[in-house]
Each structure stands twice: as structure tokens, then as C-alpha cells.
Image (tube, rainbow, N blue to C red; front, top):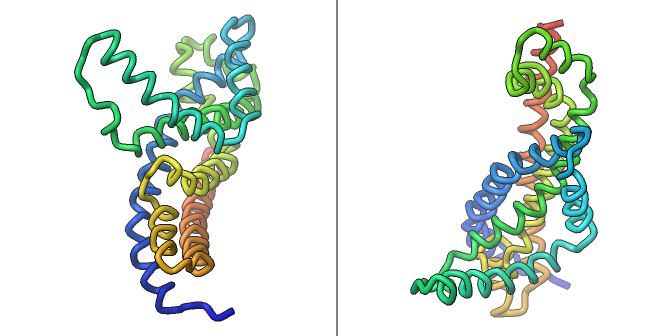
Length: 236
């Protein structure tokens, strides 16, 4: 089999136009899922919290279902629910079907990532001795101040490698956003390949782009780990 280098070069240029979309979905997903994940992690580690059972069920449900199924179900169901709520119940005249599919992609990836990230935060928070929180509260700090000044900085160092893995997984998972008609890297490459059935070449181009993006993300987190480690050594 002879690869069509000219086609790969053209597809590479066009697929790179989808990189901003992929990065936008990834960044928004992490920014939106982090607070939700942290809240769920706190509910899990707080004794006597009734919401912990609901959080555990949510995490089990998300982790127990394929993300492809979540995407197809969410993208099929949510527009119908929104249309019924706003246009039928409230009597508004909104064209729900014209909503940017990127918003649906961010929503479904946020719900999925929050469940994964909550376990990362929970394990990191539990790695910090409970006595430190008690000592901070005894010294007059509020719970929020204790977490912000003492607990979170220490837990972040522990969680950083797993956060990196989560970001990489989200970045790779965005390749499924084309199922929601999002014009990301995969969607652009598949569209180009469809004209001449050059799918092998197109997938190789996508492979190279994702390897490059994931490598950059890992290098960034490696630099962050080095900075945090140096900071901890200065404090020691």
C-alpha cells in the first residue's frame, strides 16, 4: 500500500484548523468539571454526609457506562428536553436546534470528567493528614481558609500526575465530539477522507496531531510538577 503524501499534507493543514476547537472543549471541560469534582470529593470524605450516597451512585453510573453511549444518549435527549421545557412548558420561542454543538460536547464531557476527577481529588485530599485540618481549625482558621492555605496546596502536589492523565484522556476523548457534529480534528479529517476514501492517511494525520498535543500537555504538567517540588523543598 502506497500512502498519498500530498493528501496527508493537505489534510494536516486542514485538520490543524480543528485544533482550537479541540483545545476549547478540553479547557472548558476541565474548568467546569474541577469545581464540581472538588465538591463531590468533599462530600465523599465528610463523615455523616447524606449526599455521599448520591455522589457515589453518580460516579458509579458514569464510570460504568461507555462515554460513546453517554454522548449519543445525551446529544439525543438533551435538545428534546430543552425544547419541551422552554418552548412547551414556558411558552418561549427558542430554536433549540440551532445551539452550537460545542456546548453539548462541553456539557457531556464535563459530566463525565467530573466523576473521574472527583476520585483524583478525593485520594489527594485523603493523603493529607486529618490532624492538619484539625490544627488549622484550632488555630482560628475557618474551614475554607484551612483548605485554601493548608490542605489544597499539599493535595495538589499529590493530585497533579493524575490531573495530567485526566487532561490527556479528555483531550483524546474529544475525538468523539464529531458524533455531535462538532468540527474538531477528527471531523475535519474524516470529511477530507470521505472524498477519496483515504481514511488510512487521514487517521495517520489525526494520530500525529493527537500525539503532539498530548506530549505538549505532559511537558507542561512535568514543568508544573518540577515547580511545585522546588517550592516544597524551599518550605522544608
